[in-house]
Image (cartoon, rainbow, N blue to C red):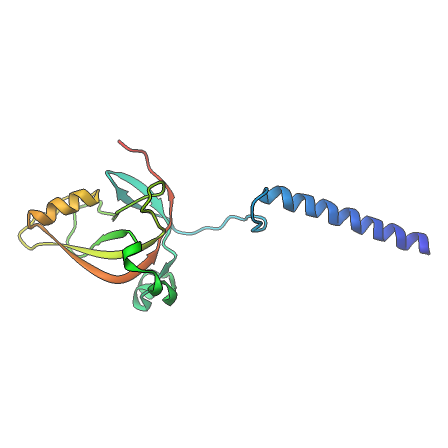
Length: 167
């Protein structure tokens, strides 16, 4: 009987060592987050300097928008200083065909953050909407009196997960 207990204990130790080795190999030498899995989550495209980036929309600081967007309401996002968040421009009302969100930054830039301050754009009644693909273009259209910009206090957690190819 003692021989059997020793065998089970030894087997348990071997199994634990194998599992620990597999876990360590999954996480590398950095902080361990555990094994990864895949999920299905809607991804969106937005423009930055004339090319398309892919992003996720996971959380918002406004409860009504959370319901409309079917994402998490995260009231603590309201504590992120607006000055530290780059702008994410969203066109409201009439828009050109194919209009997407427009980002004020992207990964790799010093100003990038996955937390964005939402800025609403609306075309003036007399203006013909054109496809907006950069924040520089937004500034020009505003100076021409064709586009209006409205700052909000809403913050969005929308990490860019893939930077598109520049033309």
